[in-house]
Length: 312
Ligand SMILES: O=C(O)CCC(=O)/C=C/C=C(\O)C(=O)O
Ligand SMILES: [Fe+2]
Image 1: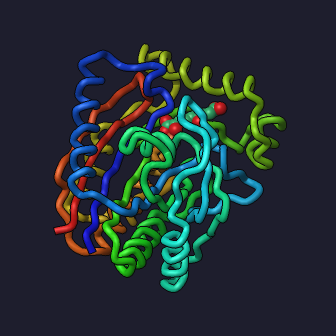
Image 2 (image 1 turned 90 degrees about the vertical axis):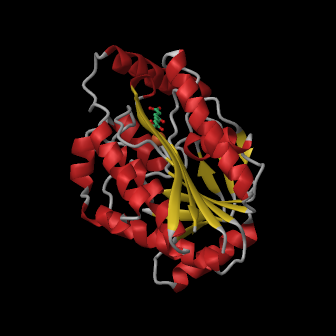
């Protein structure tokens, strides 16, 4: 089966707290390379692995991962709201294929997603409804989190199931590498915040605007160097990209949840989306990484990467 993978960091601060023009130009070039790669590969199905930031998944029930047969975006941080163009038949086939392989997959018939899903679809395809997609939520922020080996197993199972579809499948990962943005944490949260994290009460437009402004301010503080947040860790990020490039995916099984957070920040667990996507590609056969971009971008609170890979 023709298969490919693209990894793309997301950030709610893109367009809201941008770095210097030279940095933006380098990012734009990397994104153009990825778009050219995708156009040439010409996928007819995109399996999109992305996290959520308490817009779709809440502590009342928090699965480690979940595949959607339908999905709609909330429209946070300036991304589009509305339905994603989910390929429901492919999603159902993949779900069955994953369950058949012994992975306890959660399935959503109406998933709510946020900028984690919408941003890569907009950046790479020009909208959230332009390409047949199977959205796969991978928890990357809400502790407790399980071992990375289970994410690799999920990615492998989805890759194997996708191989049976006889489609041109692009496995797309959305997530920052090392980063520690201000995402709410349940432990120690004041009762009103804890209640929202558990129950998932949709924020009023005013509350959403206030939350988004908090993130923008955090980006400004971070770029100015006045913050208690964990620094971006380029060495850690490049180690991750090295393993992905060399196909050394089993290396990630020894990465611990606490170690990842200490070295690379609370949201570094978003790299689970990357590990899943590359495990899916690896399940279809050997691959080559065809492009790799990385830059630490404090203004976006992101170890920011773009990478493309294709089956041999
Ligand atoms: O209301 C809030 O605090 C929203 C916070 C939020 O959604 C932050 C998101 C950050 C990322 O997606 C990221 O840096 O990966
Ligand atoms: Fe995120």
